[in-house]
Amino acid sequence: MMTSVELFAGAGGLALGISQAGFKNKAVLEWDSDACETIRANQRLSVRHVKDWRLTETDVRGFDFNSVGGETDLLAAGVPCQPWSIGGKHRGYEDERNLFPDTIRAIVALRPKAVLIENVKGLTRQSFADYFSYIHYMVEFPEVGRRPNESWVDHRARLEKLVTSRGERSRYSGLRYNVVSKLLNAADYGVPQRRERVFIVAFRSDLGVDWAFPEPSHSRRALLADQWIKGEYWERHQVATKSRPQRPAQLSPDLSEDSLFPTTPWLTVRDAIHGLPDPESRLARDIPNHVFQPGAKAYVGHTGSPLDEPSKTLKAGDHGVPGGENMILFPDGRVRYLTVRESARIQTFPDEFVFNSVWSENMRQLGNAVPVTLGQVLARDIARRLRLRK
Image (tube, rainbow, N blue to C red; front, side):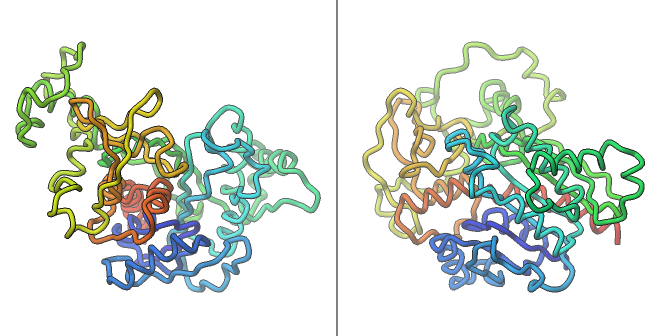
């Protein structure tokens, strides 16, 4: 069985997806005590894939990666996103929470066959373009470290020479990776949420792997056809005509041609919460984390996620609801907050996975998580390529 190491695990979304893809976890590192307690709670419940994780509550900046030991097939890191988030202070590389250098330190120590890094879309903004390319260079040549008193700009220039100069590149004999990156929308891969995140994937160059991101399996076009051309979506959910949202004013005429959209329909909020009872009903009492949260209101800039579309991006803002992302908008205009269980489904956590803190903290952990399904899709393809090399 292939092995993995997880940095900045949070509540474990990416780690869980990687475990589901067949990797045996050697180390899960996370400094936040609440997130660690979430993982421990699921270990006590013997949740599949989670129960055998080797969790260490620690600050990665002081961790000795050499202590992990043994060969590592995959190093995964959902590097803290606050320095790059559009909703943050945009301090970027000057932010003390910029932990990309420690991720590189882990690569040098563990020499993994593959690396999987996730971060927010904001990292790809033009204002961070130079630093984004710097991250690529550091991953490609991780042993070419930053010298004492050397600025990251000068370090980037040295690394760029290795990339662009054929002579210097041919003379380099240290650890090297083939690096690719891409901005992915989780909805395109079977997650009921429009969540755009940038992923960096690298394979150790001695493996000779020429890797590309998996093609999307789901699409908006297929969803529109399923709803408004075939009508199967409404039949599947037994939604009467009067209870459906308004039909889009303009639909592409070629949606009726099945051959044009071989993908599966995007999953919606309705798909995600299907089978869960009304959180205010007695039946909800028997379902972990399915507790009604009062006080939901809609106003300009705070409108909720339409029931029959993928959810807006769940975020980890104040009280978990910075822009109404954690509310459901029903076709009749009503809104209510998603329960923790519903939010967990939108992030594709299995129903047996529990969150035992207060609502706002649970929502923070969910807002920070990588959707489990998306992590599994990427890790499964990485595993497939690694197996081909054996």
